[in-house]
Image (cartoon, rainbow, N blue to C red; front, side):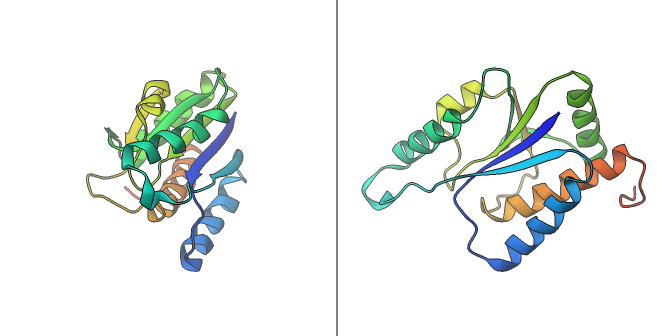
Length: 157
């Protein structure tokens, strides 16, 4: 199985890039992992939030195949603790799917078309985080899940 993370826009803060890069390198020890950066929509001052979400959604969906399993990282999603998330990953790996695609939306979230295509929605917290910081939080949780799956000492209950 491959895990692909789609994100909207680049991260400008070096400390966030360094943190996510650290965990992405660690994750590749366990599974094929790829980061796909969707280019930001330009001139957003002249368009509504809904149009921006629609345009971002079109870019996201353009790279997804019919067989991909899509997981939105969304505040309206199901909350899982770290062990439950590792169980979710194990179930997906055992199902024989080729690509498990996680998506972090832009600053306004997802278009209706992206919500309709999603197979799962997971919330990383009831709190609101910027779409750039959530990348680091997700990277750490993905790494943590693989250490749980492999019975390594990183996670403590």
